[in-house]
Image 1 (cartoon, helix red, strand yellow):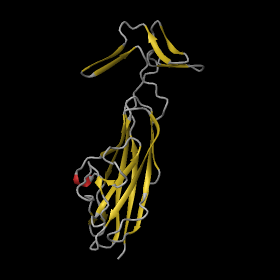
Image 2: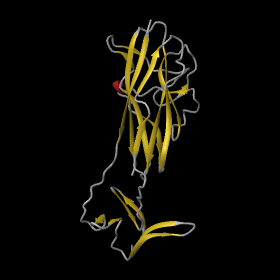
Image 3: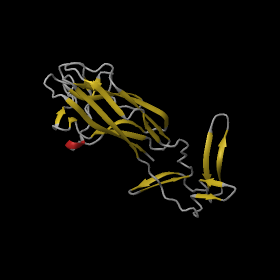
Image 4: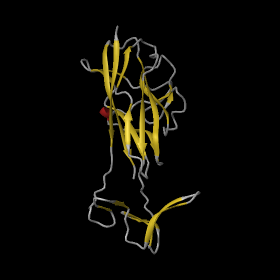
Length: 244
């Protein structure tokens, strides 16, 4: 009996673009010889520094600070957004092949890929993941179920998965900015199943600016002796979203 599984990995990153009118004095001004970012019509402004600090400011507001109400924020006195780190998201390998599976045996080595995020937005970032459907033998509409781990795990909570008599498909993630329930390399979750209406789940997130934030996703599958032979596939989509 031969059973092979292949994962097709998709990536998507979302950015928020703010429209700008080039002729507006408080937005951006430029000519053939200069570009002004964060121009202002106040009495002073600029960059100041010493051995112990760096400060970007504008002067002239009667009440500098951050103010908010329903529907708006006002941040007066400082250029709060200084994004010098462009947002980017990469995945090291977009095709995961488990090869031929043996019942009651975890693949060795387990396949993996690496997610890398650069995020300079003031609101940090998040990465979500979801599967299109369980690993499926397309011709016969037969699936390898999502793992429930040794006792009980789902798409929202990881648990230990070391028992080779527990069947299914799942993932572990390790590295930067990952959920706390992935506390060891043997803690696994299911992927959210979009065909069942499950929502994509966060696998990396941070409220801070960061460069080269990396996490390794390890994929595991285990089948019963009764699993039908064939080639099983699904697709996993990772979505990276910056915050501003």
